[in-house]
Image (cartoon, rainbow, N blue to C red):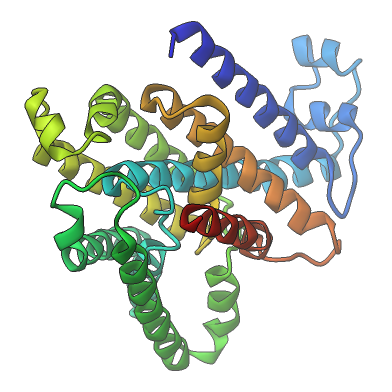
Length: 342
């Protein structure tokens, strides 16, 4: 894919992201006019005053936009981008378009380890580190248990054991999560349950997720051309001069970091890493140089949009974001699975 076409794809997705961000700031249980949103975001004097027509930023709009909606929208974008990036990387690593952090139990492992740290009263950095360890352990379990098919150099899409292994691992993490919830204090149980279904209410400080997203992109984008070669199989990649094992280790670490940062910020949000890369791949091709940044932008748009629906469909009450993504992701997953079997 030429650079001009890739840039146009990224620009289009970025414009959609900005539009969804603007809608997220304006819509909710208290709708705000665009002028009030701008007045809340920009200073009321100087250039900002010229844009807003000199309208002062009232306290209510400023509190809603700057304190509630903007951090939540940024956290949703960061989590969606991290999940979609992790899904795209796992699909390359395992050479299977159905690979995804939620389906393979990677998100479940991160959530389990994070819950253990929460119940033990660990600091925020310990919760993040535990989630990273859980995600990494889950990836190693999937690769270890399905290694006989994944390491024989088989063609793409011929590892059915992979999905079965991921489903069993996800079920095991689910059982451990249920056990931990039974052991958790009653005062914290409701918050943990809501967090596990995907909750952006705790996204008041999205900067950790945004930093993790920047670090993941910086670490993996230079390797995108080699990932294109890796899709042909380990033997072909080695024949073409690609150091396969260091590249695989980099993908393991980046995918684990992305899944862990998303889980600690917003809980387990499912199917974003499956639906977004697959739709982009169908629309624009499978060049990883284009797909990885596009997946990050598309995943951010998807979770921001799902959060907007979750906040507005039964306002002032809110739905978990994970419910919205699962309602869309489950039919798409079944369609992909049936299509592969045909």
